Length: 78
Image (cartoon, rainbow, N blue to C red; front, side, top):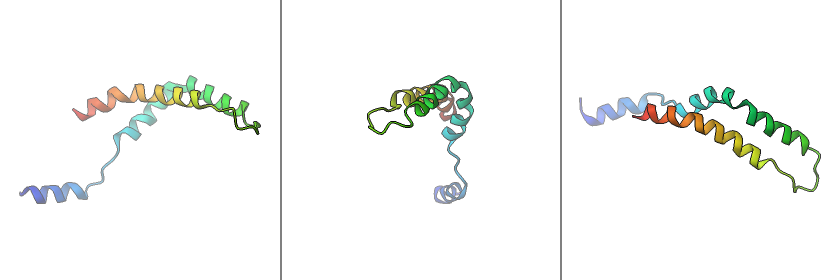
């Protein structure tokens, strides 16, 4: 089998992004940062000034998810 035919067979397969799967499996481990983010969003919901934000809590949540995903994802790449 030539390299071209192998590539064409591979290209036809559905490639699944493993990161999305790992993120979903890690989200339950990051409930506390998620609840803190949701509480912040609720707290500033009526702010009309636009000065309040929940960026810190948002990034804390995704940092937790990424910290969980990283080792799993890189182990899969090896």
